[in-house]
Image (cartoon, rainbow, N blue to C red; front, side, top):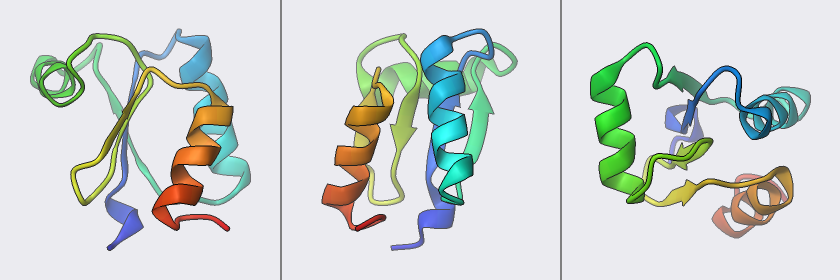
Length: 85
């Protein structure tokens, strides 16, 4: 699995998004940031894969999705996926 293809869907004013982006940056975990306020098709895709409209939403290359999370949930999810140890 190529974790460089990990995508995080955000709204720039969302405090959980800001926290998640900082958490990923500090740990140097590669990811693509997608601002759903600027791209309606990305917003539609996020809603389709997550079943909701809340951010942040993380999409893994294997199709697994972590919707509406905080950094504690993000860390647990990435440990389970083998991205971090």
